[in-house]
Image (cartoon, rainbow, N blue to C red; front, side, top):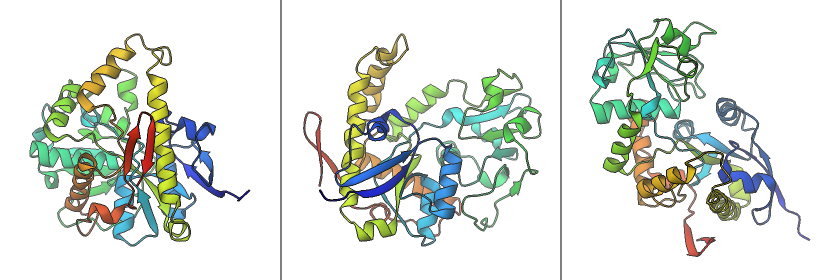
Amino acid sequence: MARKLELTLACGDYEIIRALKEGTIEADGISLNVLTDMDSSSRHWRMIRNREFDVCELSGSSYLMARDRGRPFTAIPVFLHRRFRHGFIYVNASSGISKPKDLEGKRVGLKTYQTTATLYLRGLLANEYGVDLTSIDWVTELDEDIPFEPPAGLRLSRAPEGSDISEMLAEGELDAALHPDIIAPILRGDRRVARLFSDYRSEERAYFERTGIFPIMHVTALRREIVEQHPWVVSNLALAFEKAKIEAYRRLTNPRTVPLAWFMDEWEAQQELLGRDPWEYGLGAANRRNLESLISYSHQGGLISSLIPVEELFEGVMLKSRGKGEWVAN
């Protein structure tokens, strides 16, 4: 028997990769060691700084910056993490901020400037709500994954070492914060902090209906030398990810799987709005438009030097259905 190629995959512990993690679905010719017990920030840092994994769910923003700087990474069009972001703009309740334009001239916290979630949010604020981003004093909590030279006009500073921007927001040291997570003051019901969009779900729905974009946060990156040495890995990995996702969809159609009383109502409502495959892989029209927005926001923010064509960022994989539950890579 031919020996399988051993690869390490680092990613989130998602339902859509469960079958790969448990080994019920395998990538042909590949033995995957799946690592899921780390937070996103650590995973991204370890891949970008040290190239510790063969395959890695990686920040879309960091991947763009890495490719722009000639780092030895490539990616397949498999997008394990998407999230609407309107609900992740937080304000101090005493700041007087009630609409996006009120952020102008304010002091706004970020985990990092290049985090994909905050990159998308800045793009939304500028392009959808007309916010002048250069009027804002941006304050970051952590070191950037990829050091960069801030563009002219960007007012960017670092919070004191050990600071937590969500607590700075609650204490009034910041007027607002863009954050990739639901922040602790919100979780504990701290009334000093609120969301900018109280009905963020309606904002997100309207955004999707207007743009067709369900924002891609992360890409699936590989060390370039793996693809150069084993080109067949691209299609075999992509197909395995697709099969695992379809298996997750199948499993979730059993209403007993998820302990939520009205889960199937939400599942059906999601399908009605987002379609039957919201986590679509490949470079179809919707994903291309999604990625072009991310690239544009990155360029506008001074993180990349040019508008990189989508097809230059991903290996040539398209996934195509050939029947119920059967998928091929072509």
